[in-house]
Image 1 (cartoon, helix red, strand yellow):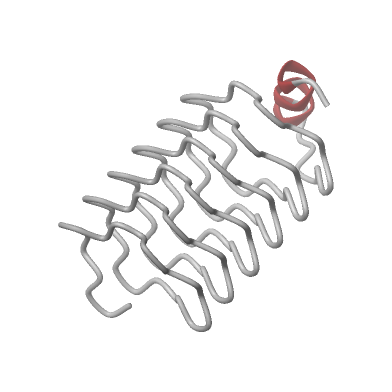
Image 2 (tube, one colour):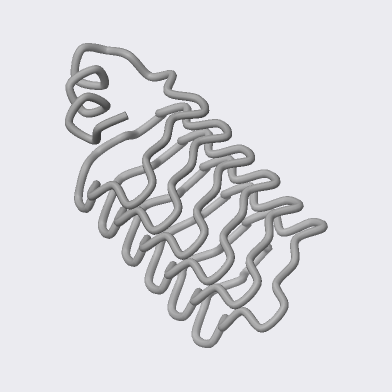
Length: 135
């Protein structure tokens, strides 16, 4: 799916884009609050500064995804692949990262208050200066 098609359909009120192929998509700064991208392929996608508040990214592939300063508050990332993802400065308050693969992810300065990391793989993830209060 082309990013412009997704954005046009989203603007028309569509929210379900499960299993979409959005590899290397440029979606920096977009607002996709409440979008459903279950099992979507977002490898290498640029979602810098994107608003994904309440998004459903369950089992999504975000390998090497660029999400610095993104809003992932209350997003569902259960069983998602976030290996080497750039999440520095992201706001993910109350996000569900349960059973997600966050190996080598960059979470520096991220706001992860009350996030759920139950069963997640955080091997070699950089969590320096991240706020993990209540996580």
